[in-house]
Image 1 (cartoon, rainbow, N blue to C red):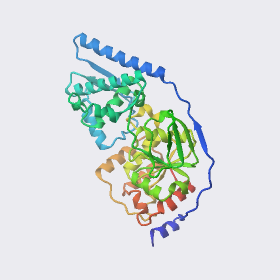
Image 2 (cartoon, rainbow, N blue to C red):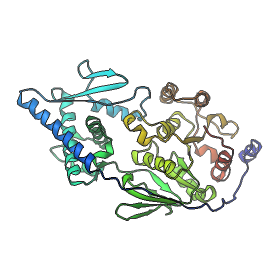
Image 3 (tube, one colour):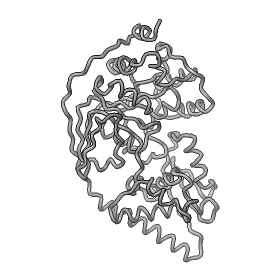
Image 4 (cartoon, rainbow, N blue to C red):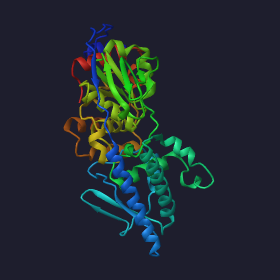
Length: 401
């Protein structure tokens, strides 16, 4: 029996029906005057710098102490590469440099230690850049600053972009602010496509109907107006599936806005999803691989990440619904699974330990222990099955978690 026939039997029906035109939704977002908050951040930077100068003048090697506010009730959602970077970038913990209290970790950047010297220098470099940008009320991308630091004097501080990104997060913790408030903006990698238009503070208009989608604006705070006729938002884990759904005209057939973070989403992608959900009041669905890392990516959108637990209210979108691919449906879909790797099992156990996991989530994770599959496996033998059958039936039947 073909895959299509199997899925018609289990309740899926192929359809090419077009949705009725929806009314246009439009919201205007007031421009927030951040002069006072910038002034406060400048003062904090200057106070910290003054404290460091006093330490040096008193004959002591300087150190900086701050709370990372990491919530250990959740498990870190970094990739293995990110975790390796953390271990390289952070000082080795000891009783004097860290104290865990009330689910928070207190970090000391100590110039007296070998690792501390470079970390201290990079922290001060980032603070100096933020100080200048806050005073002149300007922004630059972290990528731009990274290239500025690739010179003979500071090359050793940033062997790769991730070191700078970590430093920006540490400075934000030190100053008790969000990373984007430092005016050092991440370069967006997420894409958005659909009947959606943004107007920015400089009156630029971003039209998301262009073929292939557009990069999400790297500073969502510059968006002053949003309009759309879409009925929903569909987040897709991977760019390849995003492009496949565009080719299959999923935007028209589902009347949706397509979003992809190309794997683990960056801050701007998460802020966009939250804006579309809360301001336009659109339902948000997500499809990810039926593997531990796919579920982890879904959790970043829905529950937030440990790395930015302080910013959870600004980034997590609790209305995100896991539409698929559910491990429990792989057999009925005729999808062959492959065994989990040791790395997969490690992430799976971390997911099972998170307090927000409901019985429905845990059931899917238990089934996942028998094998995993990718989104592409669902439509491998029938090109339009995902867009024309699977997604419409799942949405219509409210078959999500």
